[in-house]
Image (cartoon, rainbow, N blue to C red):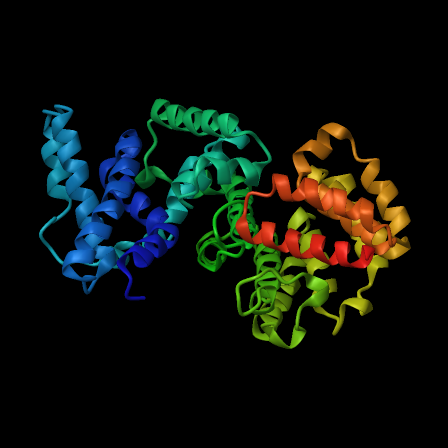
Length: 420
């Protein structure tokens, strides 16, 4: 990767959370707003400096030192004329060539994981902590967070602001975390990792539908969670199994031009069977717990898709039953949508169409354009191509990711061809 702008984009996606977390540990949560600004400024400086002088030998260390310099300058400009200012400046040797990656091990084991636990404080509403963590650790934009949480952009911004204000009020810092705090927050941490993976698996905006580096970061955090948190291994293992099963299909999920390939059309010989075997081991550990989580049920659904050699062999009877459990124990808009889709594959497109139409209009509005795509596919399978085209068109208008738009265009063109 010799293009500086592409490398900076890669670092922003993959290293932003680590950079913010390390600066937060050094400078404190109370300075989080300035820390985030400094991290983004460092990324902007990198594009300019690396284009002129070449990419440094240690890009991570360069970004860390640059962001630290920017941060200290901003603190001084804000007249932080107290002993704390000198202490903060002395905390980091800005002239050294240390690699910040070498300073990431402690009780939890990884700075972004510690920051994740910090922002999952019980006093912060669940919806706010998820939005905050996705922005701070994942580096997601407001629109991406809104799509991941099925909320408006304005609502996403309010949740992030609310979380930051509450953290400043609480006065907590990364170094203060202990085992009891971690145990109290682990459910929220898992939920955030789950959303992080989902956004990488189907990016809500941008050029790429699949962002592997975001998915890899979520999987890495889940591994760290299992390694360093000595409780509730079963549920964490179920979450890791779920992500591994989905990631096993990455090589077949896009074609050589980067276009999306749907599950029914994927070349299963390209699936990563090493990841599937590891997921099976995780599922065995997951069965040793006493509690049933949504990750247990969703990993069972993913396993049903991975265990057969063709789409036609899929055991839709089991999948429908698993979605019934999800709908009863862990209801949500996407559960309703996928339950209706699975019914359509088990009992026929007419039944699926009826189930899709029966979804509450308020819930349906949160599912678009996915609901429109499901409706179009049901009509396509029924041979009603005019109706399918109408729903593809609605989905195309609502889709925000360019590759999703291209997929819808291809499906719409195919339906139009069937009308001739």
